[in-house]
Image 1: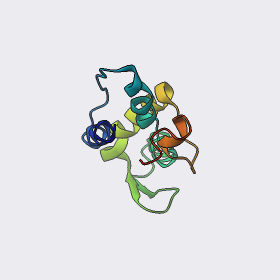
Image 2 (image 1 turned 30 degrees about the vertical axis):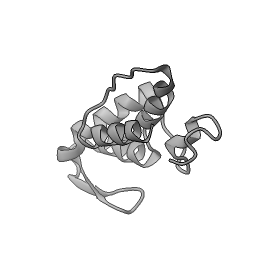
Image 3 (image 1 turned 60 degrees about the vertical axis):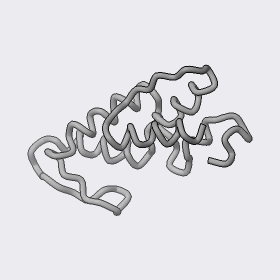
Image 4 (image 1 turned 90 degrees about the vertical axis):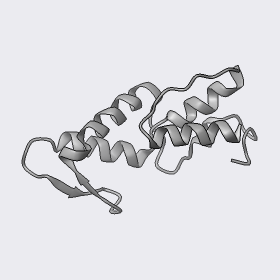
Length: 107
């Protein structure tokens, strides 16, 4: 399972969303990994809402990066679409919270 989680994580980093699973036990972890992190959601929403031409760059609500509207707009739209399908984690949650207790506790 650790290999599957690594694969999905790398796929997401490379912009690939979608995974073929070969066993039902893989469904929950894959879906959990596609759930949008709160920080991603807040950044994406801010970028899309700020796309009115009044500014080009602004500080993230998490104060750890700058969000540029034009370069990040397509990313933001994809994040918002993914959030509609998989949901958004609470800001203090990790994807493992979506898995049954004790399952993948080593992740």
